[in-house]
Image (cartoon, rainbow, N blue to C red):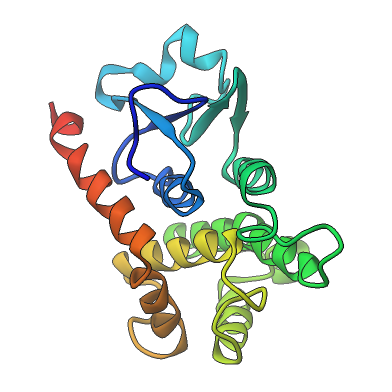
Amino acid sequence: MPPVDEADIVFYYAPKTRAFRTLWLLEEMGEPYRIEHVDFARGHHKRPEFLKLNPMGKLPTVVDRGIPIAETGAIFVYLADRYSRGTLAPDLDDSRRADYLRWLFFGAGVMEPAYGQKFFKWEVPSRQVAWGSFDDMLHVLTEAVSSREWLAGRFSAADIYVASSLRYGMLFGIIPTEGPLADYVGRWNARPASQRAAEIDQRYMPRERT
């Protein structure tokens, strides 16, 4: 569902940011949502009214019926459970729930810092950091998507988080553009909600450059 003028869910967004993951989640959910554009160049993210919602001054940030939610992993768990449990989030008594949560937090707790290690050439002992190493992350994820179509047995919010992170890595040349990971991202790209999210992202680009 494209963004609307009035909705219970307010999504603070800027194009070409990590907030794209949440945009795609919202499109998969199909619930009405309203976009508030955040212009970094004009310092919108450091205004007092925004810092009350997210003291880090970061995106994504979502307000649902007056309740602010920050941090992508928390946003995904909150929205998927509230609006899409049984589809984008397995039910609490579903045996796939454990795998779903594992991969969702793998995206936030392993992939994100492992990317930082690769980008910034951090020299850290793998046994002393929670994410292990970039190579460990890549191996584990490649093995996972080689043996299944979706990480938790069926498509879920965990796939939105992980696949969008992989696509980001491909754009910057640290994730292979061929093989199991690329095939997995291709399945993600083929979903209509992914394509709608990409179109919405492009729609906001001219405003971001002003």
